[in-house]
Length: 416
Image 1 (cartoon, one colour):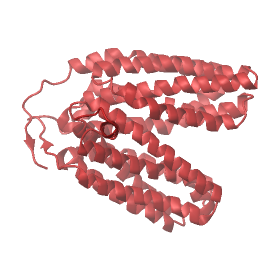
Image 2 (tube, rainbow, N blue to C red):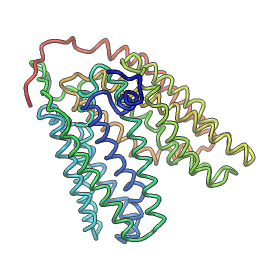
Image 3 (cartoon, rainbow, N blue to C red):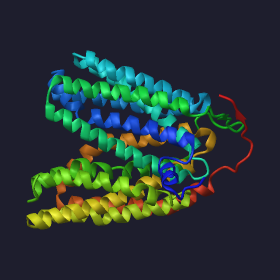
Image 4 (cartoon, one colour):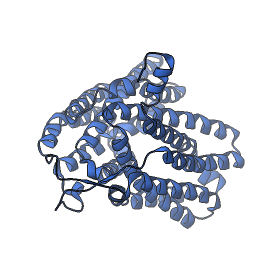
């Protein structure tokens, strides 16, 4: 492919093959819809539907916990029946369940609809992982980095759209956000029709039915990945509270940190992530991420002891360093998560990885607000050391995982 001219650069940015471009477009559309809805979902349920916040939280928590259980079975189904087929079904269910939210008038109805949505989301997420592994081809790290760049951009654009609707503050604006998200699921499913039907790789003879849950190195990585995932709520939850309650920085600093985080990730993900391809690369990247978080967390804590201008500057520098760590951490997750999983069971392995990550995200708000905010500066320092220790485990984990992978051969392919 000639990539020297403007058309070539555009093609490379958007994907180097038709399947890559189709999956990037589908993911982008889906994340725009997510950004539209997620930023305003709590307000829709409380202000438009009229449910108490406690009931909304309980319903979504129940749905999330039940949905966690669908990741591994959904991934196994994707491995055996085809990842594209499973993901399209999951997206269709999500489109219908999202539209059904407009009919919700009670706590029980919200819990039921949200549970269906979360089950489909978990199964679809595992199938998405298998699709990414298949479409990535010879340069999987480069493709995954591009994909995440467009995913971040989609969320950013969707969030901007949600902000406009929130400014309107009307029932019709909130309804438009719900329908916009439902439409994004439907369009995403339609775009997946552009992907070619891929053969299903048969499992080796006498392999266990659920190999992922007996793969000790991968289970260990799943736990480390879930724990390192606490870095995401640091920016979205912990730092905004710290700014408002413990620093002299103005409230607009919170908006600025989100802009810096999102913009930096969009601009650097492909440049950094495309170089992290093998599990060994991923192990070193995991360590680098831990060291960057070791720097960023104390800087966030230090902002509480400085005057206004210095506090704003420290926070923005801290978010810059933290965002760099986020890019290295996500790239490490791609390299290790896909690289340690066998081709014939990518869906099941990605389902397990998603289960661990989502469980960690569910526990994160309570852990971070209780431990870090409860201990203050000491909590920030403890969190920094925690991330650094997790990162240090990356290289030995990569060596262990690579050493214990089964030798290739023996697995054929059957059409699915």
